[in-house]
Image (tube, rainbow, N blue to C red):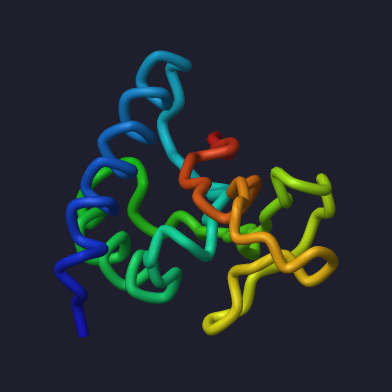
Length: 116
């Protein structure tokens, strides 16, 4: 099953990986390490499936994708307490302030690629 939300992300990811491999003069891409935040809404196994389809007949065909999944993180602007919001609770657990800053979980980038 291919998820359309992840399709455009995967296309951009593949374009980036192919471009960087070409710059490096690599003939084959063997691995792609991706940092993926929970708040992006991107599902890693859909990216994997899309990548397998889109990379056919390219130097990235058969490359292994590895995901470092980053959970959502926040810090209270009132008391500076760091915490992990839940699906239902986004107020600071220490002082109950709703003035928070998102500090993690919105990442989406290619950390590195492995080539031959």
